[in-house]
Amino acid sequence: MEDLISEAIENQKIIEFDYDGYSRTVEPHCLGVSTAGNTVLRAYQVDGFSSSGRMGWKLYDLNNADGLEILTETFNGPRDGYNPDDKAMDEIICAL
Image: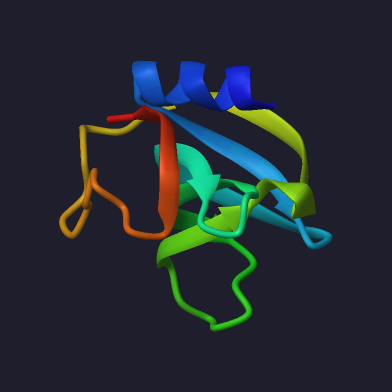
C-alpha cells in the first residue's frame, strides 16, 4: 500500500480506499510514520464517508485502510493549509 500511495503522491493522483469499512476519496499529500509508530497518510478528503460530516484535512492510520486504488483524476498541488513538516509524524516517507 505504501508504494501505491507514494506513486499517487508523486503523480498528484487522487486515491480511493476503504477506511473503517467506509469508502474515502482523498488527495494524498504526505505518507509517514506517526509518533505512535503507525504508518499514516495526511490527505485532503474530497468525497466519501466522514464521521464528522465534513471534507478536508484528515490523518489516516493505514492499519485501518484497505482496497486502495489510484484513480485517473489528478489534483493541482498542495491544498491550502498543507504543512510538509507534519508534527503528527516522526518520519516522512513521501510528501508533495
